[in-house]
Structure formats: C-alpha cells, structure tokens
Length: 236
Ligand SMILES: N[C@@H](CCC(=O)N[C@@H](CS)C(=O)NCC(=O)O)C(=O)O
Image (cartoon, rainbow, N blue to C red):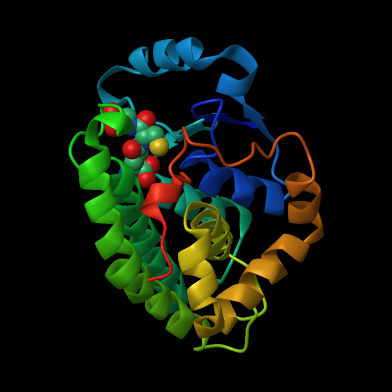
C-alpha cells in the first residue's frame, strides 16, 4: 500500500524524521501537502473528527491514522520489520526516539523561547539568551547521551548492523545542529566520533543517498525547526 504523509510542505521540520524512515525503507508514500498544499492538510485534519491529530506530521494508512513522530516511527518499524525484533531493544529504541522528541522541542524553543506562535524577531533578545545555555549545556548533554548509546553495540547503528528510526533521527539531528550552530558544532566535532560516523553511515545508505540528492529533500531554512541565525551561534 501507499501511505499518505501529511506535513507542512515547505520545510523539513518534524516531517523529516518520518520521511527519512519511509525513504530509507523504500516504503511507498505520497507527500500530500506538497502535492495538494497546506490548506488541504488543514481541511483533512479538521475532517478527522474526535480522533484528529493534534498537529502534523501524521501518517494515514488504509486502516489507521497515526500522529506524533515517535508513534509514527514505531508504527512503521512494526509494520515493516525495521530495526530490531528483540523486545528490549525495541523499547530502548523507542525511549531514544522520545528523547529525540524532547531535544527537538528544545531546539524549537531556542528561537521561540517566549511564544511559539509569535515571530522570531519579536523574541530575539530572549532567543539570544536561550541559545547561550542551549549551546553550552543542552547540546553536550543530549549528544553525550546519544554518543554513549551508540557505544553499546558494534555499530554503525544504535541496534548494531540494522538501522532503525532513531538512526535516521540522529542523522537529522547532527545535520540540523551543524546547520543551526556551525561554530558550536565545529568546536564540539572531536567529542562525538560515533555520532559523526553514524551520520555518514546513514547518508551512505543507497536509498538515503538517493533521497538526499533528490528534489524531495528540501534544504534547511529559517522557517524550519533547525534555523541558522548567526546571532544565536558561538564557539562556546
Ligand atoms: N510532539 C509532536 C509535535 C508536533 C508539532 O509540534 N508539529 C508542529 C510542526 S513541526 C505543528 O504544526 N504544531 C502546530 C501547533 O502546535 O499548534 C510530534 O513529535 O509530532
């Protein structure tokens, strides 16, 4: 079957964590809002009744609609035998996927520390303050955790030889943080050899390499979650 993925059409955003799993797994999908527009997505969500998603991204299969990135990834892993068949490992992968969701919420709060619905320029001073503590304390805390997770098995992936959704997410996090904080990530580069190797291993998967080279991979931009504002970056 072909899934319908619904997500804002002009950014990578949280949709990218789903898109990368679909692309890496060779799973057929239509990127509905890119085809039909954001208004079509709003109409589709509004028409889904009391079990409508709270927010995009969401994935529609014949029999089920799933929202929340971590839940969508879990659904795809189950349905398509992705990652590990070991229950303990599946819970570990899901735990990491939820930690990724925590990190992504913090990344967004760097440029929107006061009001997620207001413009960046209206909260720029607070964003500069938020970015300083995020660069100095939160990036190392999250990356230390993911680097340690990658050391538990003979890699290159978290579960060992087989990739899972969290590997796609860690690839996206490394790429996104390098775009958002080039100076800070350059200063930290030597501290995270496993994450750097994982980033390269994911990018080298043939299906991912083809996706990254395609027009379907929208470039990072300052409407997305990872945003590069020079005033928010720094060496420390
Ligand atoms: N925890 C949710 C967050 C979903 C979310 O915040 N989606 C954003 C776009 S990246 C959105 O459209 N939010 C609208 C809103 O919160 O009102 C997930 O991981 O899927």
